Image (cartoon, rainbow, N blue to C red; front, side, top):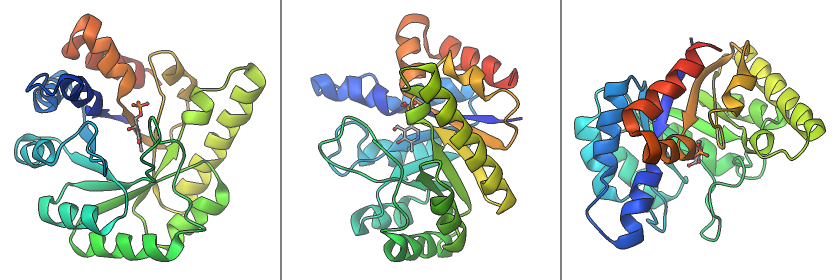
Length: 239
Ligand code: PXP
């Protein structure tokens, strides 16, 4: 059965919008765990636009499930990860001007530096996942550089504007999930998944974890965090 990793970045977005002390992503993480979330995710961005280092440090102390830190493979972030020791680091590309993570890491271009980052993190006992597009060549490199897991970028599928594009993007995800599993990588999926698009993944048993943030935090504004997480969990259990 696939697990749900709840990303609480956008609780911090709301806090930072006013420079206030609330809402606290730590409180949201606690509520998500109580509702049954299998892991908590935060992305500590170079520009600190939402999650702050303080959040990650407190989460490390209080998260009872698993703490997943999304980060760019920079020396600053590697230093923070080695100090805080999340259960998993998901390496993502990062551009200051982007609204959100816009694509997977290009492992073909950045193979040498990412290989080094993977080794550094794994030597410290941290599980390493790499966020990549559903591209077979990228997955082969993830395997070659010894990642523990890949997270398939589902954004192009979730954002597709017509059925043709949707089908094409979904078949790329299916192929990627199958080849990743064949290469003995753990296969996760995330980006842009909401309460409707999640049902498309029914029967794709190769996916071991869904990483979902924006839709859950948005729903939580209406229904509260507990209901928002339980509703997504129910949909994932039905896949
Ligand atoms: N996975 C990765 C690697 C991400 O960068 C993000 C966005 O922070 C997510 C999953 C979650 O995406 P969303 O907020 O669209 O659910």
